[in-house]
Image (tube, rainbow, N blue to C red; front, top):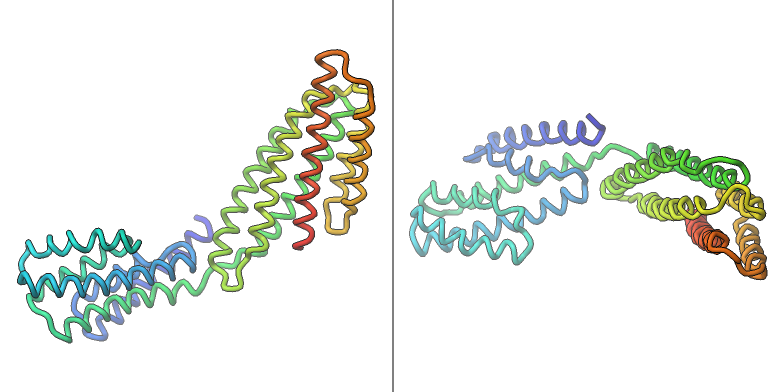
Length: 317
């Protein structure tokens, strides 16, 4: 089991048990309902738990008020509960509090069981909701720290990006097949997806959130897309291409300047110089030459975008 699942399991067991014990200690009837509310109110992240708890509390208050009105008007009969549901279900969806539909309606069935309404019954039901929701929120104040893990992951991702760029450069001057790196690219793609999932959870769990890491990973996801585009374009440029060394050098230079201290301005100037170099060359004479020239300009376009994204990442570092 992963760290998040273990944490959620332990928190749910502890919070639900404490809710039941406290509800019983206060002498509340239907004390087990407090534990059920706690279980339903614990979500994977702190933000989701607070949001869900607020919605369920609002849902419970509306349900109790509506239930009291319906039962007082139509008497405490089973069919009156159906009238309550005909009113409460659409209200819940209109107010976007439908996740509280189940537990709130359970509280209303308690009113049906009592067959009457008085202040002690209302206090009992509000107490169950307060205890159940309160323990869910308190328990989720703890969330496992994942920032160090994320930072290590990001460093590995950046290393893989550098390796892929360098390899792309080498394929232009050596008889290498870019398909060799398909597994490396696939691994990078999977690592970014997993890191993004973790960053989203981390961002929702931290009060002083991890938005910078999340934004950085979103940028790297776009870099990954550009690497895929370059991968497909490079397949059209043969190793024996006369000016392949020029493109190779610029790709390796890009890889070597990915860090915050790298000189990406110089790299972009070199790209612009090479674009002009290829523009003043004679027009392609064959279809194959045309495809190669087109692929070169596509690689330059992708590299320029890649550098702009990396500059944005470095500026936020």
